[in-house]
Image (cartoon, rainbow, N blue to C red):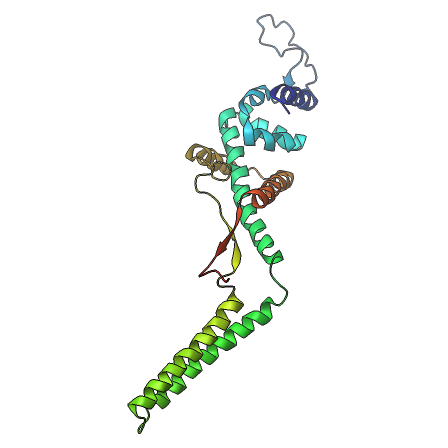
Length: 247
């Protein structure tokens, strides 16, 4: 939606929210203009927002229901926030939501890629670790028992090293060492996820006003999640290999 479209929708919301006051009777004999005017219109002027909101803030604002847009407009019309501060506050909120959604999406994507035998594999890895520790302690004790010749001790040590290596290789294979693995990253300073100091300050000022709305939170979450899912699928996920690649 362009600025002109937003202006039109904001004007319609403003007109709908306008309350026409009941005309009051003028004081008898009042000729100095001090008496009540024939009619008074109370309304929220959202015209400044149409030109101030842009980018992320505009995207979030235009997806909000009319009641939320009106509530945000009142912050501007009352002077609690400038239109520019509201723009920065909405941008900050959406970027923060995207970061949270990214890590949640990454977690879900990683879990979806795990094999169903993950628990059994973890148990096998623990069993191997326990066996390695037990073998190391018992066989070292035997090597230094009275009567063990230097030649026999050297042979036992060589056999222990070979056995431990075999067990370590089995553990590495279960752990995925040397196999491609998924990695999820956010680039530091990416303005799609990280608010500027100016936006953060506006966001804090907005939060201090105590605005709360379930519909606002729902729209914010939906937009953030959709963005994060697209980001993970297109650029936020890579394959890495820990340790020497298995050939």
